[in-house]
Image (cartoon, rainbow over all chains, first blue to last red; front, side, top):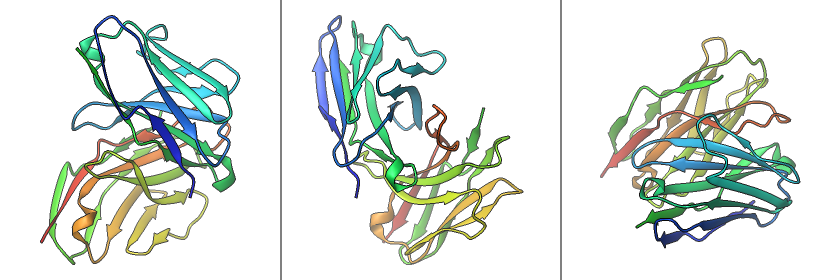
Length: 116
Length: 116
């Protein structure tokens, strides 16, 4: 079936630095990708919708300048956490909509971000 | 805005038993998609089953079936002959029809434990 790959799976960065997470659809083109954040023992919270070739749509309360999203191609979206702080430590998951299979949404493996 | 409610934070059943996870939602849309996702300890989100609101027939995938009651806005998941590998968090999710920018709206999840 469709596969969405997310990289890196784990990353540790120093406070104040930036870190980039990639989300790729491996066998389908995704005009729309989504970025979620999940705190321990909680549900997934939608951060933003990434649309190929246009600006991302951010959910209320999500800082656009802190969480930069780029969707430069039909198979790749990136999330950059800028000037990371310990409170940004979390599990980040991307997903992509496959229009070829009735708009089923497939998820990446997720990325653990730890800011020290 | 849509809301999804899962009223059972945790459930525990014996292996081979049947278990039903409840989910209700609120929306003003007439056409939409509903999903159940499984999240094992690996954190990978796995699609269990999906239902299109315009289809009256309940979706079925092997041991997994749903009871979709559109008028009541209810979407429960039944797992028959439960197996140890079914132990995971289960999330009910809602999605608007394609064309919109919205991603999935998740419930808070139900932690299902299958006891040997």
